[in-house]
Image (cartoon, rainbow, N blue to C red; front, side, top):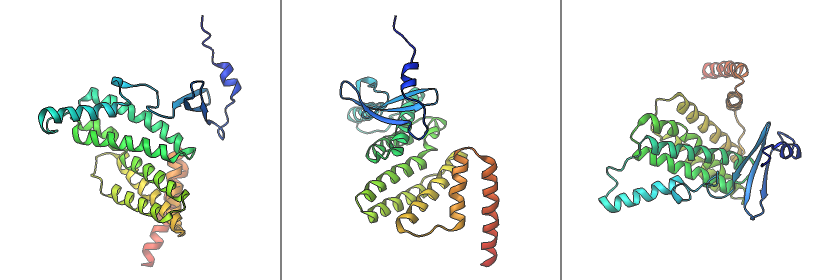
Length: 255
């Protein structure tokens, strides 16, 4: 009987929040990302789909739907009438979530090229849902996070050029992403509004760093507020909001 106890694996790699991600090569020379959690280990494929699966015999669900659209256009002369139903949506949503988990780790370890790859995939999933999904409630579950996906994609592309000592191109990427997010259509979602404002603020802060322009006190507080909300420290968030309000009033009175 196979031993199902993973305790020996966990004991060999004690949890350390500062050293909880590693990229290793397996016996078949395949590279994977491993993440040590408090009570376990997660593993992601470095290439292909994060879970290593080939849905429909394809590299991804996204690839399957791109092929379906291609075949539909070939048979009908246009895309008109092609639809993504609820079951299709669930397949795309699950793949988008897998990509999200992996690109968070990739960005964390500074693998910006693969971060761009995975965020590009999720942006293409957003486009598919925007164009073909029947149910607004379904597609908005993904589209409400589009500002965030654009932000991470832009930051990763900018970092690639900063590493190449090309800050001007990095600046253009960030500026373009800010405009892109501002031009997104509105959705009746608090999450969407939050992600839109938050992403624009982060990108503006990055732009200031690239340009070496100091942030104003209010801009610094806004970033602190976002960090507090990120870790759900609502008491600290309330204090920061009060400070922002006070500084905003003083600024208004000076004008």
